[in-house]
Image (cartoon, rainbow, N blue to C red):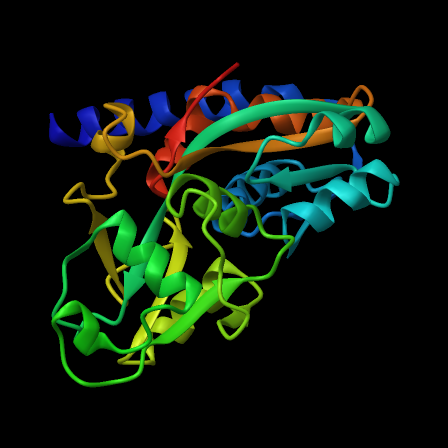
Length: 271
């Protein structure tokens, strides 16, 4: 009986996957995606599913930051751009951009897990990231210089954090700049005196996520709108997407795509 039940479940999942991937039937060719780095791990799993079933389809994905992705898709260097922010009106007009939001992501403040702190206020964050506070003893901790990490200026993670968490307060030019969310995670996990920012979909137990004003950066709190530092994750095309790009967008917004999106700590959307 157990064996029969397992067979039925496996068959059901196979049929579900086949149905969700059906949009790629009779399609072939290549698709180049680049831009925001928060999306990459999630999309790699989707791409693996697609290419395993349809070997005549080749999909590549790279980082570079949301700003770079917007520039490249606007110039038709790539087929689709990943963006962790909504493009500006000027960017949309200049690049003839079409927007497809498929997930919501939070942005969190991270420290090394060994650091004895769980929450910071907006004022403390503003003072730390502006360089006004430079030592942990100024926020009641040990006597050590804060090693501040941020993303480059083309990063949507940085722009959304600057707008929603820092309320557009300045970011110190002395902050160490890293190129991706994955690089941020590695840097902070190895530096006991680090403070940085990261996509919640990328964070794991190698770093500690801090509360902001006592509110934890969780999917539940983002859904309740009590944790405010969140943003949409977009796929962007220059004009109407190709059939292959359109199928890719549809798959990420399908039921199977939503499962993948949720698996990596994002909130799936389809609009």
